Length: 255
Image 1 (cartoon, helix red, strand yellow):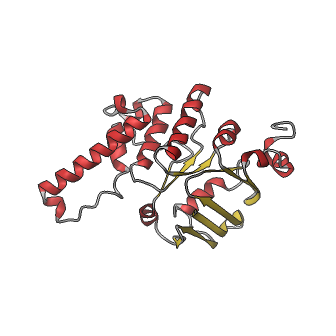
Image 2 (cartoon, rainbow, N blue to C red):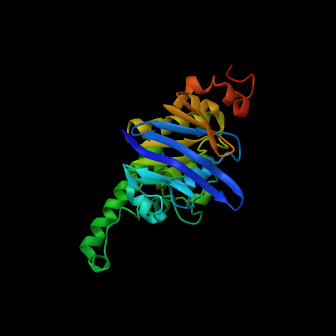
């Protein structure tokens, strides 16, 4: 079943076409990766999906509903969350408080209920329990009261993922989650991404330059170059595509 459908997506910045007539379908319950050289348009696709940039043309559908022109705060209500290429945490908030930030789209309190102690207490307790569950899943329980800016880089990446998971997404967009990690940390990150799909039943759309991560995790891979999709298929098919080897992987790699 198609969870995310991108049809004819074109994004322009002045005279530069960052994404050029892109078609892509992400199937529910899969890990779908987008790869390509720097400047290929991968992060721009993420920004278009989440409403940060508006397309010049084309459409984006979530469960068949067109969300192309919606504001970011509305798109998250349709079950989309994301992380960023550069780690974004609130450094002077605790890990727990950072997780709370991701719960805002789930927290359904109107203005009147904000002044009702019982309602507010129930909502706060539910948010706290959700944060504990996510922290336990990511191995962050021992760091909940630490300031996010004081913890190791890998843990900061996990805080960002945890904040995205707090909104109960149907699909999570991970932008280079393995960037800057050691080999050991990369293996840990791979397991977390796999568990997000298998244990949390969340579809993953992944942008990643580490081909070890992409080829070992992905159910489907789309390859972009200069804003266009040049190849798509299962990892074993894409790694042997001559156009992909020429544009990105290198003539001798994965031959």
